[in-house]
Length: 354
Ligand SMILES: Nc1ncnc2c1ncn2[C@@H]1O[C@H](COP(=O)(O)OP(=O)(O)OP(=O)(O)O)[C@@H](O)[C@H]1O
Ligand SMILES: [Mg+2]
Image (cartoon, rainbow, N blue to C red; front, side):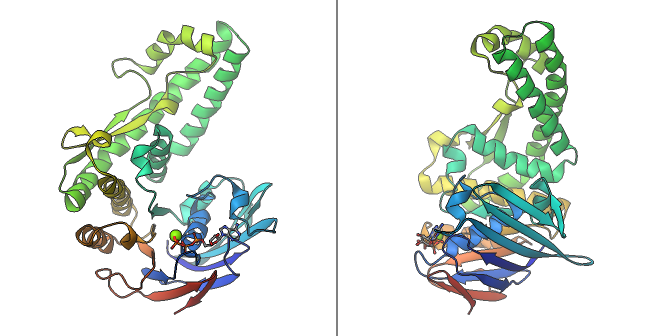
């Protein structure tokens, strides 16, 4: 749902600000090191309670301060909901609609946001954890039971690993296996279903951005010709020896292919960025087809890294997405994205309507 306002205090190098946004297209222009990415990071944090640049909360707090604070107002049918976050070394405190909430998923429900930034190629280059996180964001928004199942699975996994470390045998381990198999199998099925739904949107985006046929294959986290129960039995000795569980959705991955070949081995860095962008745009398209008008896209300086033609293609796809846009740029308007509903200028951390 569109974000109407953001107030940020002590966040990175940003001066305290209170900004009113357009429900459709917001453009943020400023020189290098002025605070453009920091603003997108604050917006992302409001929807995820984490950054896309760092895992250290402290790095987000203005030097010399102990905490930062973000307050956002999200439009809903009957008015607005306030999202509030105060975070620092001791963790994050989250409020939604004036009530303290324990889980960041409450934020994701109100302000689902995706980012396309200059580091997006890492989605393909880095290990499977990044891709699991990416897919799970999508599954969470599409499958209602996903979060409960996810929590159940990881609780059972933690307990099983603890039993392995304590060198428990027989019954102690079996006690967790039943739960692990039941929730793990359901989790994998949800991910599979989601990837199937995503595929047509991805193929379309892949053709539009790269002229390539992009496909996905789900690796559930255990051998495809076994059930999870069989896979756990098969790896039981190894699990005991190493005191970790080797089979299950916590080991899942998504393999990306272009024209039938492994993307990682086939495409250039620039193409990887486009491929990862295609994945993100496909996710937003799918999301919007199921629940229209809820999502935001943060686009960090797309002109910086793409050649003219590729940029035009990306911008064409982005423009067609019915999402709320926050776009940063070094040099002013992005031809092709139309006229921004609101423009902001940022200089040395000071953000102001332009
Ligand atoms: N915790 C912090 N406290 C104070 N300043 C910070 C903090 N973290 C980062 N900065 C500073 O904020 C400035 C703005 O960074 P940001 O990445 O937002 O710039 P940008 O406008 O996106 O630049 P570019 O165009 O180069 O990508 C940088 O100079 C950085 O050193
Ligand atoms: Mg930047």
